[in-house]
Amino acid sequence: MREIVVGAAQMGPIQRDEPREAAVARMVGLLERAAREGCGLVVYPELALTTFFPRWTMTDDAEIDFWMEREMPGAATRPLFKRARALGVAISFGYGELTPEGRRFNTSILTDRAARIVGKYRKIHLPGHVEHDAARAFQHLEKRYFEPGDLGFPVWRSLGGVMGMLICNDRRWPEAWRVLGLQGVEMVLLGYNTPATNSQRAAEGPEERLFHHRLSIQAGAYQNATWAVAVAKAGVEDGHPLIGGTAIVHPDGQIVAEAAGEGDELIIHPCDLDATVFGKRTIFDFARHRRPEHYRMIVERTGAVPPSGADEHSHPAPEAVGTK
Ligand code: ING
Image (cartoon, rainbow, N blue to C red):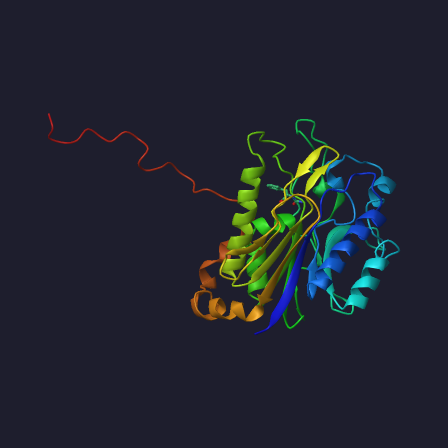
């Protein structure tokens, strides 16, 4: 039994004009509650310190860099690290990263229980678009403000197990989960900010968004025999709704804990990392069952390429012989 009591700390909305210090104070409040409940790890959302700023069109570098952190921990986040160390609780959260070279990434970190950063991940699957798109109900400019991550999908031995991280859109791509699975991941931590509506398909509302969210994290966890801790920034930010649905998923795919609302909300579950063993040794014993020699296309081909030529059954059937 290798148990981690995990706190998934959903955060409600952060308005564009709210300072980082306000978000950090809310994170510390959630951390205190989690510590009182015996949590050893608290997971926060993607871009946990600010509003989801990729919904806004910005052209000026200084304006964009305002939303990024130049150091971690920095002045605004130091109180969180200090409190986590005092309480002996590991934390994971997402933020916009500005490197000394001026590169921008959508980043998440994981600390140990002494608040030392043991892992960093930079979001690889960036959804949305680069240029302002007036046809959209709202913008989604992650491809404009961030580079694709350059750290791959690493895992770390920490908290008694093998930990990995994904960020938001990554959860929709089975390849991302499988690369972690091929490194023996036992718990995937992922924050997200998911708009409750599709900027290009008005008919797609929160229920369908929540369906695809649950489908993605349950499939990812089950098909790689790993725990998943998916944590939302939720609620309405400057008029733009984000889904809730923060959830902890068992390695067998069941959701074992789920947030009910769209505000700051802590859901807690005792996660036994040994619950991953049965799946890894039977159904998803990769060494015994996978056939990589047939998977080459997954790595060599980026976009889908349908077969050439006509559908051999599409032309009308020739007159049947002998029916006259
Ligand atoms: N947000 C969304 C997500 O992947 C999205 C964007 C929503 C893409 C729904 C496709 C469909 O959950 C982020 N931040 O990636």
